[in-house]
Length: 186
Image (cartoon, rainbow, N blue to C red; front, side, top):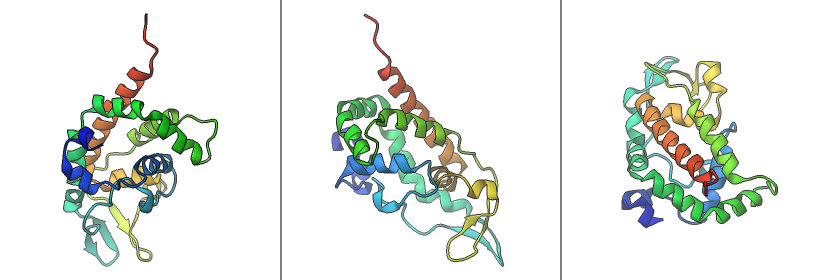
């Protein structure tokens, strides 16, 4: 994994114990309403979620996106061809972890493509994003945004530029997976 990532900084942010199981569980949870950070293969972004405003008129702070910059740079630094080769080389481990989650007849590769497609549908939010704070946590003021999946809300929270960059990387990875999955002509 260290050889694939090539940058020790990502290793510092990774949760290496049960890495494959964490990757599979996280991917499976991203399109759902919640994705528990305790099972993520990466440590949560550093710092606190930043907001602007007061008196019940909150927005995501413009500089909140900086919290995610290291993850975006690291994702972009990974060679997608090598990443997908790594994935297919260790695919039996990913598939077994998926079966262990309770999908004895499903294929993790199908779920992975489905989740990438789902994440690619994430809106790219321009301008201030209104929030409400009914209790401890901030929620999106727009019910349509708040009803989005955990994965899409995480992606929206990274900021529009980071969202675009992550989606570009996801498209690249998806293309590599699909091209590698196609039967080769003889």
